[in-house]
Length: 263
Image (cartoon, rainbow, N blue to C red; front, side):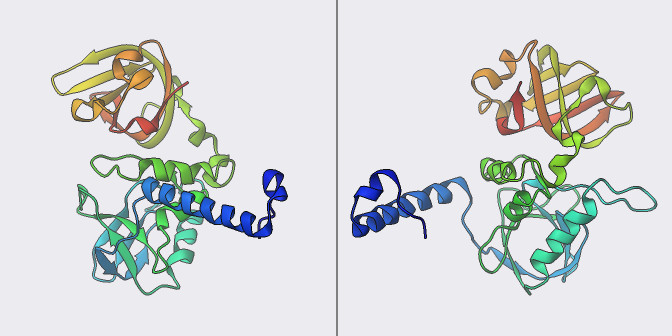
């Protein structure tokens, strides 16, 4: 039990307990507002764990966890990323004692690969994404339109700073001028904005090192203040997401300001 200190030391035991009870009540709504509450839109059974964020269900469907990314396991002779096997083992440890998992769906139910997208809960109502983030086995990501838990997952991630994947430099932000020419996939990058532009449907940030960042206008209203694209000229920024190659240029899409930091 917590021992009362300061002002509470001068209060009666009954008063201290009452104050503690009030503080608990005040804390609970904050938690509910920050994170999507437990809800079972569908109950499923896991058949196989591919890695820390993707599983195969007993019915043959594949499930990709919303809001997190874990290191990739190498197949067909490719090397696994650091901590990939550890993240897989962490997920196995969380699910192996439970016959069913609860899925809560958001706006987009499947990705372009046909995989289910969901927030995943254990029968005791713990969110699996939060558990992996707090253990340092995953990094929080934002992929529109499933953005409801971005801030919550970032808060969970913060609890693991300095452990797990955060011990590796690639998660501290790789300079855009130092990126290998053939790099693609999930990256944490940082670089100076050398040009800002605008097309019919998007704002564009050109970073040193031939990297372009696209922010669709349908999401740009959430990029306010110093994070608005028009305010980033000559600023150094750090962001996280998936790099892809477009005619020799590395590009990344952003859909939520929480994954962009002005340094």
